[in-house]
Length: 286
Ligand SMILES: CC(C)=CCC/C(C)=C/COP(=O)(O)O
Image (cartoon, rainbow, N blue to C red; front, side):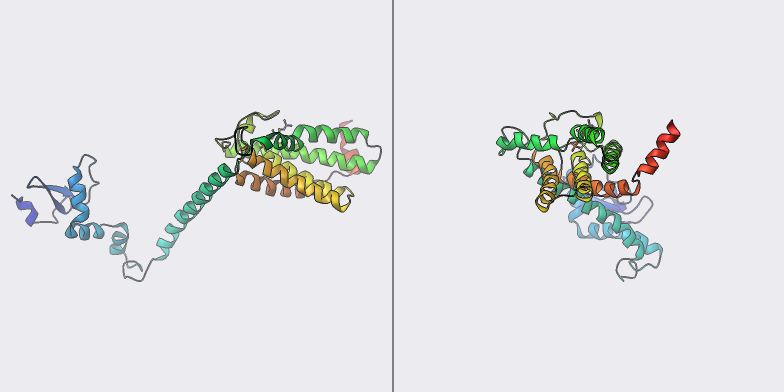
């Protein structure tokens, strides 16, 4: 039999709503959060009953805001400015998580050399060779050797600045990796040659920053014939591509790495050490 309270809704504690269970009616409050232990039939009833649906609609945050002020929402003129400000961050969040989901999916599809059993597993040794060609150790050692061997002041200046750029790159990539701490893709096998502890993180790709930085540096400071210039660009692109094919990185790690390396070259140009600056620095040290 229905409770007498059902005939007098709107008393303290919110509007009571009736739910039926085995012919009995029970009360539940609309203003309090639904108890987790509420039987499923009450949840179902709450959603399906038209009266209840109307009551629930009148409790929606938009309606509540509208009833206490004369905003556009309340007067039926569409979303107010306040609504717009609240919607934007969630739109950005949705857009970012969609981008990340696409990135993860695409990177997994492209990780075709992630191990020997992968679909392009036979190309893995070649990809690892490209990986070594963009590693920090050969680049630092090679630049130091050229600096030592160079007998012209101009050559020494270029090599010294390249060395400084490579060190700057290592420091900046270490900082960003330590701050962002994005894990490498799950399909990556951690069998890389000579890594630092931050190299367990993948954002940004250090090989890609180095490839972009060194590529720009070589194109700007070495007099190269056109085919060699194309080869330098091809090498830089292949280093980035190999990171994704080997499963070392997600696509966004490589794209950001290229952009970061490109910008780092501008920094090297800004901080360029001329022989005079160098002599001044060495004079101060002596
Ligand atoms: C030991 C030295 C001098 C450099 C480490 C180079 C390295 C292993 C970077 C990681 O690159 P990815 O972020 O592209 O995997």
